[in-house]
Image 1 (tube, rainbow, N blue to C red):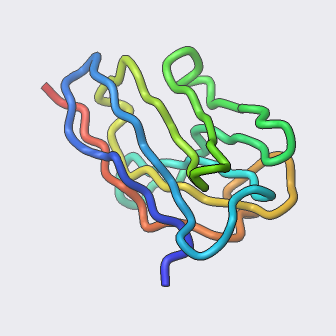
Image 2 (image 1 turned 180 degrees about the horizontal axis):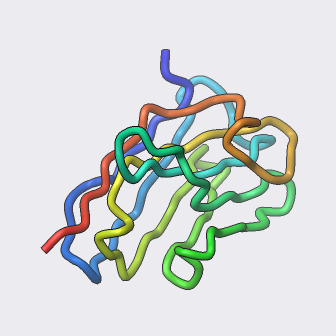
Image 3 (image 1 turned 30 degrees about the vertical axis):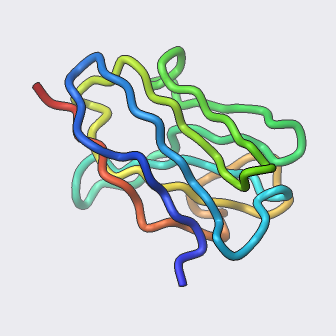
Length: 124
């Protein structure tokens, strides 16, 4: 049983776009803040890319993705999204969604549930 399921990864050219989705098959995400994290190389720590709060949908972004990535959520579809534009090779890696209950922000060590990740490859 995997609590969160990511989809939408793939291979794109530099400058391209992808939209990642994160859904929870077994529970409602409505009171869960959802974060997107990525690991760019094996052995590296996961870094927080973006976060969207459960209460007011407040979005947070890492400096490296501001202006290019947009996080959103659709509680009716029980899904969170990460729209990624103007991708560059440094954006490559495994992207994970994670959720934390009833907290308005997210950080790696505080998340309650994780997905298994989806691979994004940006290469010419």
